[in-house]
Length: 81
Ligand SMILES: [Zn+2]
Image (cartoon, rainbow, N blue to C red):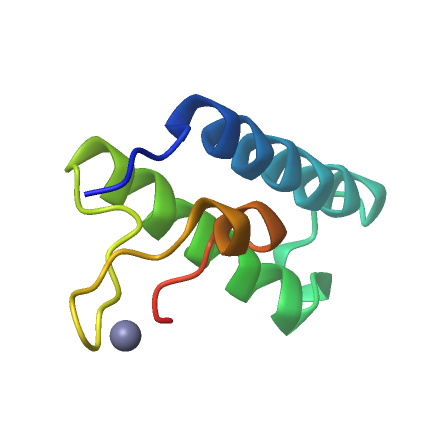
């Protein structure tokens, strides 16, 4: 199986999470005011990080094949390919 640069992808996820958190703060920490897109993004980031911890990150949920580093670089919270 191909090697993924997990540290690099983890940093991207954490940066994205920080950006959503900054938007949350700019809304006066009003969770209801946060867009559905941002809420969904947070859920996806949480799931991606949990998959990394459980070593099932980068495996397509549909066909179980590995997802390429290139595709994950573009969108690190990608669960099917
Ligand atoms: Zn697949």
